[in-house]
Length: 191
Image (tube, rainbow, N blue to C red; front, side):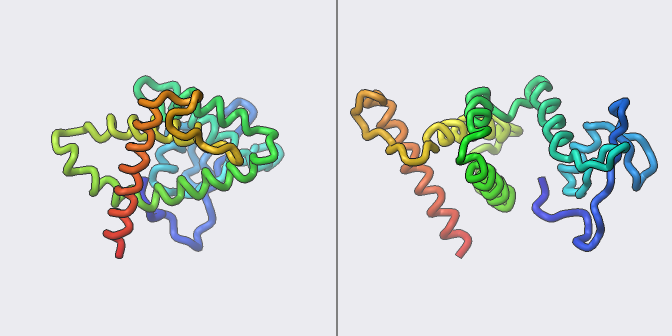
């Protein structure tokens, strides 16, 4: 995803109308469109809103969720681990729901801003083709593990406790130390 939008700041978003028969109509191009095309628009940072054709209700969130559902269903395209989805569902109705929503928004915004730097940083480690996708899957697993640790007001178990075997606690501490070192290196590069 590009960090910069291809839509000028003062241009209103493209209006997509969704009809009762589930067809999507792009009012700018005056043509029917698909969820796949809307996904491409997202990747190109083209701003759009989706409205119910009959009521003019904004249904953008529901359509974006449907795009994610379809992308997750494609072979090899899975981005969201099942355990992450379960945890996410668990936050619905919780008093921390708005906090988590804002946390995810800020985290993804920061990740998007830094993805160019991250790609450049990771390139020397994966010089032989498209192994960056494999690293991305590993990063998604690490994000899942991080989300497991994101339980407010509950301390992270110390190494050697009954909850976490000693070897796993040591592994987590080593990974955390490595992440802290990489974060510090990224901060130093920015200066």
